[in-house]
Length: 284
Image 1: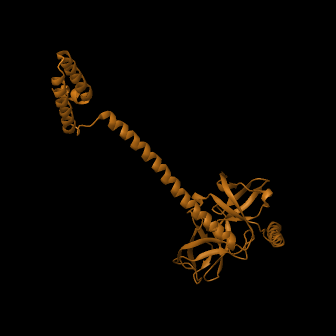
Image 2 (image 1 turned 180 degrees about the horizontal axis):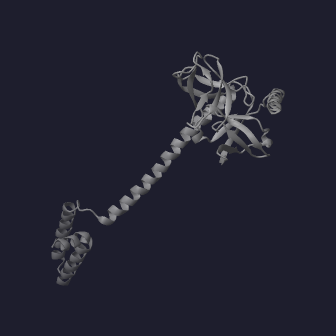
Image 3 (image 1 turned 90 degrees about the horizontal axis):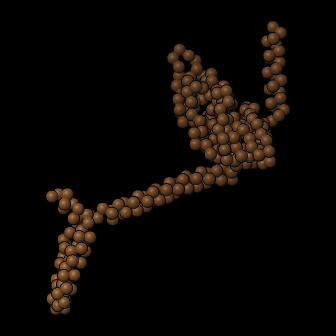
C-alpha cells in the first residue's frame, strides 16, 4: 500500500492528467454543453484545492535541480572568497614592500621567488632577477621583515640566494636597543644562537638584532631576528641566548636585493689574516 501511495505521489501530475483526460472524453461523448461547462468549473476548483492541499509534498526532480544549483553557487562563492582573501594579503605585503623601498638607504631591486633548492643539506632559493637587473654575487637580499640571505650564483636572468637558515651560517649582529655586538649561528633547533655571550651582556627577550658594521657579508642595520630566550646557564660565565628569524621562510614569495657589495678591501684583508693563521698552524 505504501509503495502504491509513493508511486501516486511521485507521478501525481500524470495521474491527475490521465483522470481528467478520461473524464473529459466521457463528457464530450455526452454532447451536453451545460453539463460539460458545470463539470469544468467543478474540476478546475477541485484541482486547485488538491494542489493547495498536497503542495507540501516535495518534488524529487525539482529538489535535485535546486540542490545542484545551490552547490554550484556555493562553489563559485567559495572561489571568490579565496580570491578576495588572497588579494587582501598580497595588497598588504606589497604595501609593506613599497614602504620599505621608499625608506631604504640602499637601492633595492624587487624579485619573485621561483624556486627552492636544497644542496648538501643547505637551503637556497632562485629569483627571477640577475645581471640584467644589475645584480651580482655577494649582494644581500631581504624582505620588509628582515634579512633573507645573499647571492652566491648569478647569470643574466636569474640568481641563487643562500638562505641564512643554514647550518654553520654566522652573522655579525648588534642589539638595536643596547647596541651590544655579537655573533649568531644557525643551529639545529630552527633558531640562531648567540655565541659566547657573557652573563653581564644586556641582551633581553624581545630585543631586535640587526646586522652590525663588523659584518663582511651583509650591509649594516638589516633586521635579522628577535631574542626569544636570554637566561644564565648554571655553572657558566655565559648566558643562553636564542634568536628567532624575523622572516617567515615557509611563505617566502618576494624579496628585495640590496644593490650594495661589501667592502672588497675589507674582505681581502680578513681573507689574508685567515690565510696567515692557517699558514702559522701548518708551520708549527
